[in-house]
Amino acid sequence: MNKPAPTAIPLFKRYDESLEWPTPDLLHCEPISQRSREHHGDIKPHRQADLCQLLFVRRGQVQLQVEGQRTLLAQSAVQVLPPLSAHVFRFSEDIEGYVLTLAAPLVSHLQGQSGYSENILEQSASYPAGTDEDYLNTLFAALQHEYQGQQPSREMLMHAQVSMIVVWLVRQALRRSSAHQRPQRAREYFNGFIQLVETHYREHVKVEALAHKLGISVSHLNGTCRELAGQPALQIIHDRQLLEAKRLLTYTGMTIYEISEDLGFSDPTNFTRLFRRREGISPKVFRDRLKADQTSDPETSSFT
Image 1 (cartoon, rainbow, N blue to C red):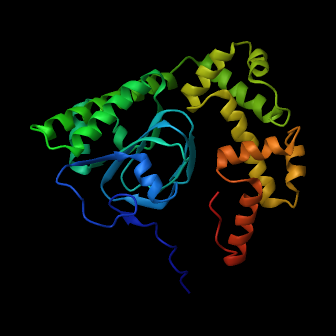
Image 2 (tube, rainbow, N blue to C red; image 1 turned 90 degrees about the vertical axis):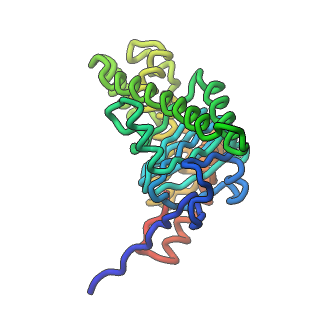
Image 3 (cartoon, helix red, strand yellow; image 1 turned 180 degrees about the horizontal axis):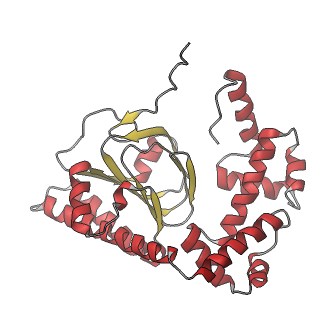
């Protein structure tokens, strides 16, 4: 007997809208907060057909999952969401930024103009804004303003503004590609750090101490982690702690207090605070949802 087909992820034009493309333009720009409020901070699993989205986060946090890969944007960044990529958003209440949606013909035109061999608009990636945060905000805000208006040569100006954003992305991708080709010594530092994290994540060793063990400065370590992993050293440590916490919540009957103690937290409140800040829910709610999912459908894996 054939097994029933899995539930398909909805395929939409923009977020949860199954309407036709709402504008004669080849792009759509709106504040993130507008969509976030409508959906109470949560955008359910969905895909866009033949559309690329650029998510610029200026303030607040976004927990997102793209094709099963979970990412936390806790600092200003631009996230590329390629066509047909299944993704989920969870926005913090203080979220600020913009969502730029590009239709396929414009995406193709921009990629051809960039002169860059890699199709960056067809690859999911996060690019930290860093010192360019204000510059990017100015670009997106100007594009949003122009999109809402009806000034002469509006389309020409919007396409120029979008081109500037794509140029920024191309340059970031080039820097990242160069970083991947850094001397072997840098990769050795990073691999050594990951091994130290695996050994000491329960001990809450400070980043300074781990950098000292590697014989490099904290800034050198953080720079290496950002270039090779896209996040600072402390976030990598927290990710490992949270991974273990979710394993224990899922596969053991340990209490929250016992898990907190096992992971080296001096106070369960600190553990719960970190878990809630990074996952958006408390450890108890995380476990309760797992139990509810297993009760309703034991064969269905929960979304974690």
